[in-house]
Image (cartoon, rainbow, N blue to C red; front, side, top):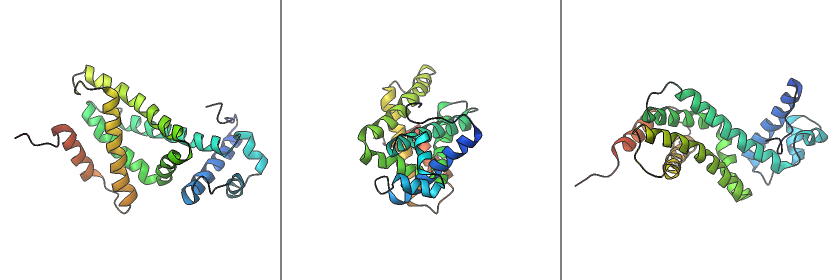
Amino acid sequence: MDEIVNIPKTKRGQATLDKICEAAEILFYQKGYHNTSIIDITNVSGIALGTFYIYFKDKYGLYKYLLLRYSHRIRMEISAATKDAETRLEKEKIGLKTFLEYIRDNKHAYNIIWESLYIDKELFKNYYDVFAERYSKGMIEAQKDGEVINADPMVLSYFLMGVSNFIGLKYVMFDDKNENYDQVVDQVMEILENGMFVRK
């Protein structure tokens, strides 16, 4: 993290960093990465151009920092929401709903994460690889407890991440008027628990 951003040591410095990030999020969401300049970001954030370089070497560093921050915040939100869940199935249910609510409240994050595929494929790959690496640890624990089938934990992690991502794409980004996710979450969990194929 220290290689990407100069983390401030004061509240004032943190407030400035937050302004830069908030401005970048708005502009990357509205205009895209390539159509947003550092000057655009400093103008919207109300800081001097030189101040930007106190925190970041370039626009790419800022973008990378935002991706890391989203990954951390999503994991923390899900961790806090699922801390009292007693089973892996319950964790997945609460985690999915928490993810959908996070995306509903932070639609810019979805765009910025997915745009990284076209900015630097490695950024996109690393974002999901790191997420899956942490996810797979939970899968391994659930397998030890006999709650999850004996399959490759990384396959399971990407499978569940794929479900979350595309359910989010449909029911948050596309159907943006919908804010009650209980029904779709219940359907997803029923499929996960019982399977989708009918045995004949």
